[in-house]
Amino acid sequence: MIDIAVILAVILAGLMLWMPRVRLSKTWRAMTTPLASIIGSGFLVLGPILVASYGMYAPLVMAVLCAGAYLYGAAIRYNIGVIETLGVDRGRGIDTLETVASGALGFAYIISVAYYLNLFGAFAVSLTPLNAPFYAKLVTTAVYLLIVTVGWTRGFKSLEQMEYVSVSVKLAIIAGLLIGLAIFFEDKATHSGLIFNPLVETGWAGITIAFGLIVTVQGFETSRYLGAEYNSQIRATSMRWAQWVSTGIYVIYIALLAYVFEQDALVLTETAIVDMMKVVAPILPFLLVAAALAAQFSAAVADTSGSGGLISEVSHHRITPGKAYALLTGIGVSLTWTSGVFDIISYASRAFAVYYALQAGIAAISAARERSWFRAVVFASLAALGMLIVVFGQSAEG
Image (cartoon, rainbow, N blue to C red; front, side, top):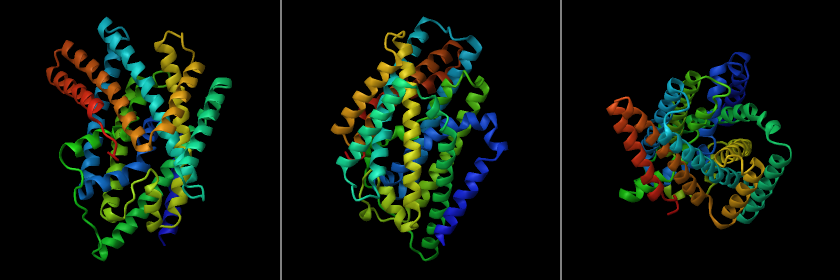
């Protein structure tokens, strides 16, 4: 019964997303880029990590992560508005910080591509007889070589055209997953089978693990760089809506997951969600793997392209996009063979925290110049928090 409900939900959600009224909406198109990035890979790894670490408090931690991301989004939206009002020249100090922030984002994208493609490799072999880290790393390395070859020789335009299809497939499968979990949760609740797991990671350790998960709610900043396609109002609105929708999806997802699985039964691996979903409905693992492969590949292509462009721009075109792709591949393959996925998640979180701290610092300076002191204090506090995340963010595996 759950299988049928899941399949129907996937089909209905897919049809709705492909309706011309939705597909051709300018605001929705602008919103899909940040939304897909926010819920793309975090959806695959967050559930098991939060349940294993925070037990019955997992939904609360999820809400706090989303709230933190929303505040950083507010800083970036404020900067979008300032650029619209004052133009790109906001003074030498801010221009320098903006250049440094762009460089930081380019580097963060390098780490995030490693995160996406290592998840791609892990999920690609998860339902096969070759389900082992060595084979997952081989798949990841092969996809890296494919992406750098395409980027160097042909560019990514042909692959980027697949983005809306990939986003629609992913969102439709997530809708099916939520319906399946809701039915499973309702059955557990009806038979007094809900589980209230204890808090495992407490105090400073619990905080630093949450710091290391910022990358899982990252992606909203992509709206900042869609200026060639959308005006500032659409970019700010699409980012805000994407963060609202992703927060709703994430909190509901974690709330449905946190009270139906025993912590002791969880084996914390990058593909743990596949084993968990086998219990909910036999069809879900196959749908999740399909969503994972589509989502991670498209996200990796987008971030590879973004990283190449940013690094080329920051270096005043001394480093061409092609050379940047080669640099990205070299770093990514090295990370693949020397680090685990949970370590890479922590590295990516800290890399994005540098960018968010710089954007919050820029917003604080701009707000102070306008004598908007409350905003200046809030943004300065966010900048300080970002630096704490950079220094203290930890892997979920310690």
